[in-house]
Image (cartoon, rainbow, N blue to C red; front, side, top):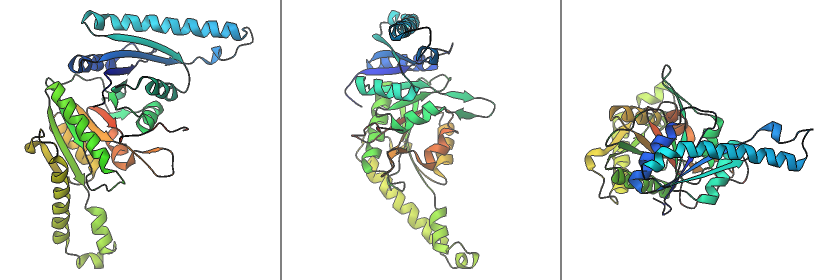
Length: 316
């Protein structure tokens, strides 16, 4: 984990319930971290108004932010009563994700924590544009919290791709495992590691996607060879982490998004730790079909980490 001991909590000033606060407080206790509660807001009526000059607009904005600080102080009171260190900040800016990113660059937190919404009936995560943009561009580990209780002790699942099938650098898998194993140790939790791989594209390529060609393809041999190759890569990756229990290391054949969601449900996982990588030449983060499909299916919180040295993209 990074050396900084601050957990930045993005607070929604319009919401009555703040699941991220409770989760962040629990983590702050376990990690001996300082909480920083943060609101970024923008009111278009205070951006320009015919009845106010620039000084009047600035005073109105300051009043708005002062009100947010008072709201944060109320939210912080139960945490300070528990002995937690809490700092407060409110800033003017839009869009929200850019304001959060500027704050992250300024404070370099250990973790950024934000609510994400969960629809029970559809069992789908309703990720906002802000969530997607933070997944894409946040340089610090990002925890998206759903309104659900955390297990005691919690269970974590680190999803890795040691074959780098989606252009993932090896450093990212190590960032995922280092963060997940450290967090599991601090929380006295159980860590599972999953590498899921899909044989369908390889078999399709081998068969030239035609039924006639498929009949001559040694499917069993190819599947066995792929399993051996992926297992060897996974074992080599986790070998550098002696604290990981071999019984918690899983290799699954199938669509990674479905395998990750299924494994998270099977083991009552509280946090899935995944990575996001930069796509060459696009100045954006390629979350990839795996994460895009997984995020909507996860029954738990999500932590997204980046490779070492990741920089916030200059523009959206």
